Length: 119
Ligand code: 5GP
Image: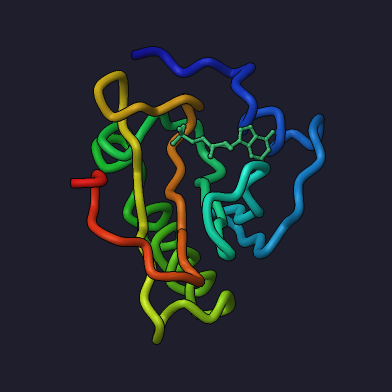
């Protein structure tokens, strides 16, 4: 799948759309989801142009990968969900229900989330 340079997170990275930033590093940007599903709902995205987690793992450099996942951990700690627990989700592609085609993980927490996939 080709990367769409006009997807909403690409536009956020270019500063064309505002966001509520939680953390910005060389390799990642974390910001509050516009439609939170729980008291904590933060998105973490790499700064590079990757469609989803599979694309990221396949093409990103070791430095980008390390920087991205370090930011995910730092944000979870900053948000206070490292001890209470959270769900870190990467919706991927059509069957995964991914809406925005720029790799992102959701850090969701602040309440008991129940079982995965509503089963
Ligand atoms: P996906 O379904 O692709 O995994 O999740 C995309 C997420 O991006 C959704 O939770 C949605 O609420 C969030 N989102 C979509 N557009 C914007 C936006 O312009 N700003 C922010 N902060 N979040 C957005």
